[in-house]
Length: 143
Image 1 (cartoon, rainbow, N blue to C red):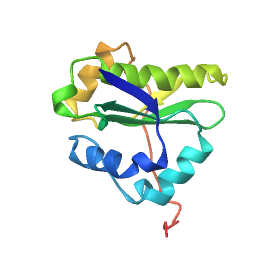
Image 2: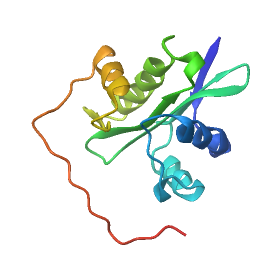
Image 3: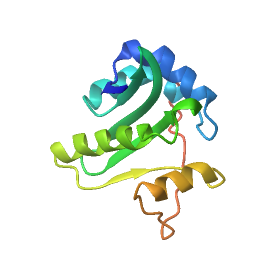
Image 4: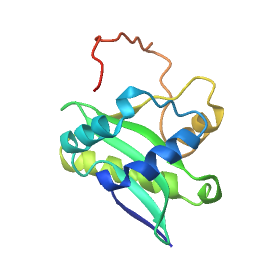
């Protein structure tokens, strides 16, 4: 049986290893232990891990800006895919956001990550083609 629990900083090493090994997930300086610790503190109870017999097999970061929720880095180890683990992780994030009054959640998928696009459509998320995302660095450099 796969158990879902809130992510703790103690899960970081296993989660980052899973994210690094998962196609379509980009890891950068904002995913350092210190940055994830701050993220978890700012967004308590919105990030989750999935474990099977004590081994981390899935992870997701969930958070919000006070108005909209955001889901990041949902990953499930290949042997555990197709069994509802990814869906359960996402549903936990959505339930947590709903509980604190957040009405909508967004996520970002690389345009060429066709497996992720298929998954998100399959579990009921709507693709937005009416907006374009822009990014600019603030110049901040994590320690």
